[in-house]
Image (cartoon, rainbow, N blue to C red; front, top):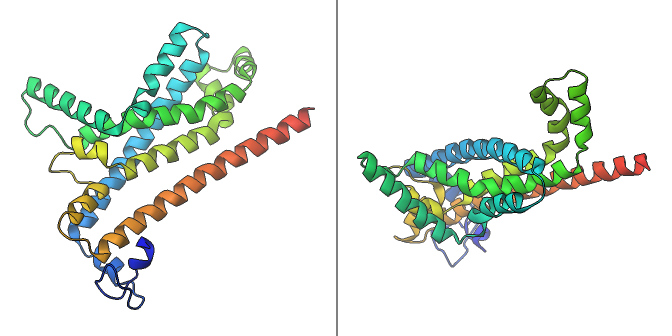
Length: 251
C-alpha cells in the first residue's frame, strides 16, 4: 500500500486518484532530503568497507585459534552488538561518546565520526559470520603449500585464501552496507544535530505530517534494501553451487 500511495496523483494519503511520479520529483527538489541521502550513502559506504576489512581480518584470526575457552569468549564478545537490543546499544554508545567528549573538553562531539564508529561496531559481527563459514570450507594446506614454495604470508593470503572466501567477504560488505543504510535507532542516539541520515530525516518528517513524498522516500529505501538482500542470497547460492560442483568433481 505504501508503494501504491507513493505514485498517487494527489496529496491524499488515503484516497488514490491517478498515477503520477510527482512525489518522486518533489522529493529530489528538497535540499534537506538530498543532503540526508548524501550523508547516508557516505556513512554506509565508508563504514561498510571499514567493517568488511576489519571483520575479514578478525575472522581469519579467530579461525586460526584453537578450539577452547579463548576462542569461544572472543566469539561471544564479537556477537554482543548483534545480540544486544538496538536501543541499549544506541544509548550506551551515546553515553560513552559524550563521556569521552567531556574528558577531552570537546563540544558537540556527536556527528559523523560517532555514527561511523557505531555503524562499524554493529556491522562487524555480520561480516565475521559471513566470512567464517567460507574459511572453514577452505583447505588450510593450500596457503601453507604456497608459503613452502616461497610465497610471503600476505601474498599467499591474497592469492590463495582471499579468492576462496571472496563470496563471503562480498556478502558481508553488502550486509554491512544494508544495515548502515537502514539503521535508525542507533543512529538517532549518536548522530547529533549537524549530521542527519535518511531514516532520521523520514522520522523528522513524520512528526509534522505524513505526506506522499514520505511514502516515495520510504519506497526508495525499501527497494534498495530488497535488491541488496536478494543480491546477498544470490551470491551465497552461487558460492554453495560452486562448492557442491567441486565436491562432486573430487569424488
